[in-house]
Image (cartoon, rainbow, N blue to C red; front, side):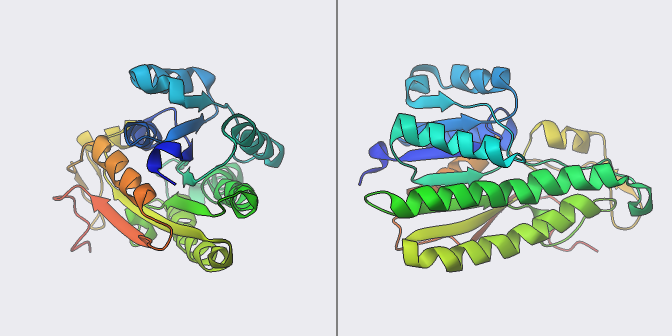
Length: 252
């Protein structure tokens, strides 16, 4: 099966990393289903795809809602007939405040999107991938540098990204018998709406604040597309793509 006949689904496809990944997958020949909460944002991604927009499907939805997730995957299967690649990208953070000042609602919102949403989408992807012919597929989860080392005041985000590593490994193990591969991409300081504050300075481990370098989000998109392009007998289990001069190596 060639790349040009393959189907991908990207969550959080209306902005940032999700949009960059969707555009890169389209350029590589995938048909791409786009999902996210805001239809207008998905339409903007389609607009940026230009002539390749004909190979997209916009399906607004909420990854934290099991019924919505089922509807998203049903639409992809109905229109495209199969699913070869899922990029679990949708995510969010909480306000950067001391842990003891976080509300339960703030904690729950991050857990629901960053962890439960990935689990729900993974469940539905496995159901489709193991039943299709040819069977199998690939799932890539958006981790983070925070899956390895936290920033100050990032407990909900860091906890969920550490959990994603465990879920990625479990999915890779449990998916083997169905020819389903699973890997994780850990991103550091891609230039998106979420990292805009880094230009003003962000808290460091020593209590100071510093401006941090960022990298072009298009390079993340190309990295995701590379992972998606591999045959199912090969897998990138974990890829770290980061701004070369960001303070990760040597933190603390």
